[in-house]
Image 1 (cartoon, rainbow, N blue to C red):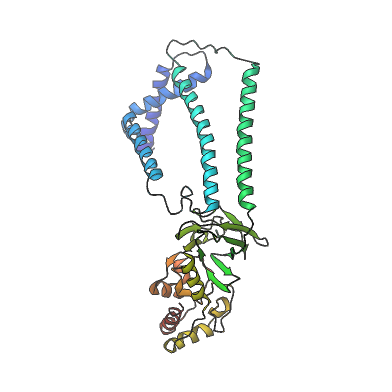
Image 2: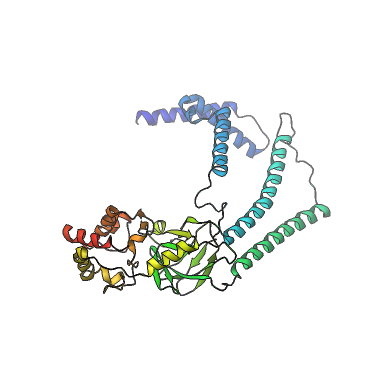
Length: 395
Ligand code: CUA
């Protein structure tokens, strides 16, 4: 028997002796078990004082609770996060925000009522020394009470249900007005393809739209498709989540009232790199949006000093998956690279689109985004440098 085991057995014996000495004779068997368990743990604490190390004193507990509440308040009242649903910047998100405040109001009132009654019951009717163990008087068959606790919850559920239905139909029922921008978003493992059929533009991961202000606000309607598994389009400040389902077309729309960058995320687990399937929506003024469209519509010309890099692109497997308009590369499986360098990020928002990151990405995509479906092309340094130099000219 080891020394530790021996000490353990002696402690156990001390505990059972201590509890045997202290166990009072109670009439209710259950209470005796609880009571004796309490005395056992007290005896155990005395036998091994260092077990009290994990013990938190009531003032310390109150202080940590206050700290926790202060932190929660700071999070709630401080600078809202870039993806906060409580800071909407577009119509469907604003409708959902309004609706959620209403639901929070009702459920908050229920919580406050129940919690208050619970605290009153615990404090006022707690067990006191000298109480008899008799059951308190029971109430049966009060029609008023039965009706109240049946009718009130039915009314609450009805109000919540009708409000939910109204918000859902309001958002889903919106038809694309004349002149709305139409974009097809295709979810892929693990990036987004955005197609602008009226402009002949194809881009990836970064959606550009005009701001919807002025006398004739221009809304953006998105047709959502999936090329593989289920994904979900979610830019919290612009709209609620809408899934992208294989063999089905879903729709959503946004009416952004503010310019700027709005971030989002695929919100449906879609495989290994689901977490690195980020969304970026750039909301521009009308003029800036038109300029962006014109830039994207232009074909990229190849400068003579990067001709070797273009040759590498056109003679490796790159072109099976990627398109660069004006070259033989017209693959559809990966992002369109015609204006690769107009994008701020690579690999669906995983890293910034810098020359170093681009080189690292082409050299070994799995190092930046493990599980990425783009293979490492095993290029030697000279060919890799030439290819990256060429890609850097795709503006
Ligand atoms: Cu796509 Cu998660």
